[in-house]
Length: 68
Image (cartoon, rainbow, N blue to C red):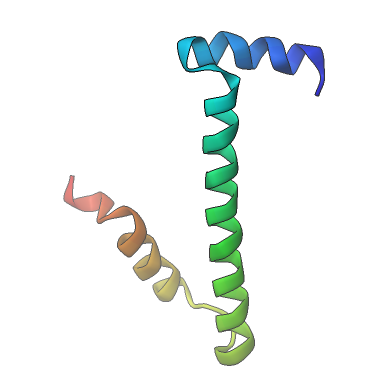
């Protein structure tokens, strides 16, 4: 990993440290990979997702942003 990247990460992670940061980043990436697989499987079986389907999925995952 480039030294300047490590330096920036250390300045951002503070007391929690790089290990915690990496763990959370990997956990997030694995979840995103899983979602990408679900979408790919759906699109293979049903065709490309519509904007409405994407928005419905977004609301289920992240809540209704207009309700805030």
